[in-house]
Amino acid sequence: MRPSAMRMPYLIAAILVAAAVPAAGSGKPPARWATGTPLIGEAVALTQWDMAENRAQCAPLALLSDGGVRGKARPAAFGGGWAVAFDVPGVRSAYGFAGTGLLPQDAQPSGWQRDRLTQQWPHMRDLTALPAPAFAGYGVVGAEPYPADNRAGKGLHSLAYMRIEGQRCTYNVWSRISRAHLETLLDNLRLLR
Image (cartoon, rainbow, N blue to C red; front, side, top):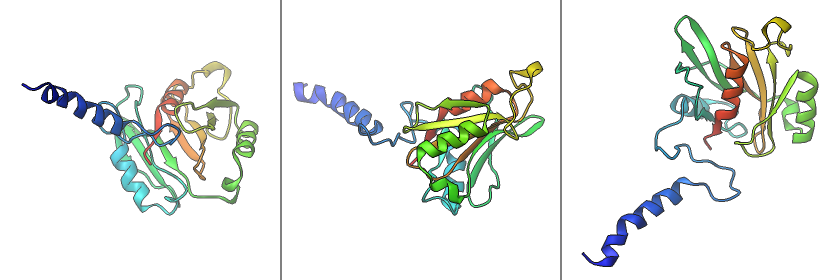
């Protein structure tokens, strides 16, 4: 076999890897990751997003991991936007994420949005896997802190409002499982566009 023919599989592999990696600074991760498999909730998110009024300002998301919960993804209604809810045995909409309909305040810059969420929510988290600045304010539904006797939020309805650079909407992310599960979701969400 000629030496150039022996290098061909390596060249093809290098091209495939390069195609899967976003250009530096593009802020656009691939919808399919190194394994080539879709992200969790990807198909439902893309279908819902494609029909949403806010699709030009609110890119779809999907999960790299759901913390091992393995809920069943389904479309969920979210006025003006799109949503993916996950059902588990005995709990409908146990967790999920949504690109909300747009409000006038959504056009404000990132610094203003961070201040708003910091004032509204008892907890803040930077989201380093998303285009910066990306951050979320979260707690129990109603922007309440976790109670002293249940700081882990087990069984409570945890909710986060999330902002991502380049997107105009305020995303919602929720978990009725636990605070740690909500934080896992926040850390594992990825943009699809």
